[in-house]
Image (tube, rainbow, N blue to C red; front, side, top):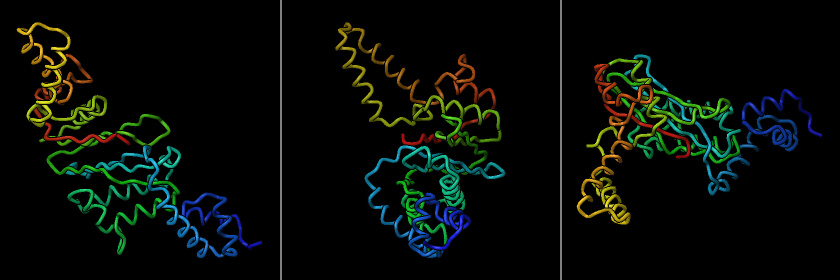
Length: 278
């Protein structure tokens, strides 16, 4: 039997993130040599990466990083297979390291991010693959948002108290107003608008909604003369649901989000909302 201690097992777990039994087995095979056990576990983990590619990663976390002066910010989604891994310190450390890297390097898109070096000689893709190997689950990085502007803030929402945030919202105002930024971000988290204004909705989306509204109205047997008014009403209802500024404000539904912003004397320049797995 290999000569090693409980302290060796603990150290190996800290170095690799592997389970206790896997660490004991690796130490047995390495005859108590921690360095060789680390290497063995990493080789085993990397072999498992390809096998995990077909699995579904629908759990995970959204993390944020906002500059001290609120002039820039990042939210990033990191996905995994189970909530058990998602709430672990090692998984969240990886997510936070990725957020810090994005904030520092400002990659143009996900392809540029994955190809960038997070450590000397190690790309972000390799870093994620290493987390995949160490944590024993499929780990996926495919979404992030970053803003730079006059005032940037984030709101992070937990759907379960024992899990990390599952929804992250990033907002950019034209001037500082922490209270309004937080309230509007909370509203976005709850109501999931897709666009900021009507003008931001692509023409093909509007045309599709109008076509569906017309076909639905005809199928209901409405009078031909009433069709234009009914269709227009349904398209307007779509705009109200899909665009942020027209929605009733979550904290005071007698006002629209646009009214709240105007009364506060600020403009919302843009927003991003990420919900894990969606």
